[in-house]
Image 1 (cartoon, helix red, strand yellow):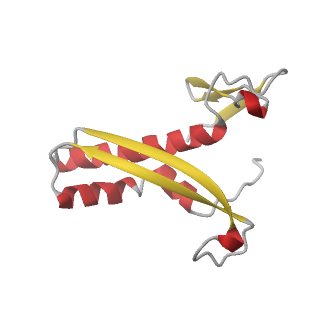
Image 2: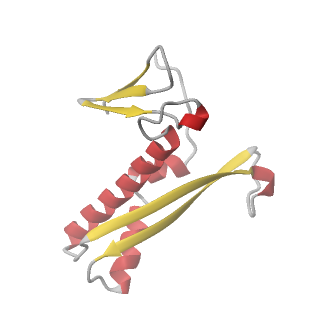
Image 3: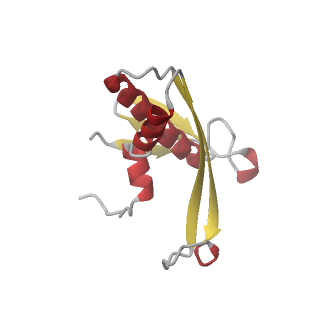
Length: 139
């Protein structure tokens, strides 16, 4: 896997991300001290998650020969206190709830729709987000 380099300029909060041969920007909205020239980091994370889910759904349907014509995914995230979250018994101060609305377009039957949705939830970014992650200093 290639490395990703993030550069923050001298002024403002706009950052430049270099991922292999691709360059894109991240910023914060005006009310958070940014210049609102690009999506904020959380929106970019949700964009990466939704894109990965859509790509995974498309690839699976293509492999099966199913008539998936399009995928639309709307995601939102809300941070909540861990102690107040129903069913959570861990020790984290906060948990994050990602709400999703997935629309599969095309003449799919109910069984195909259920399976594609299940597979979309197994995309690589979804697995990273839902699993424990550990940050270590690179050598």
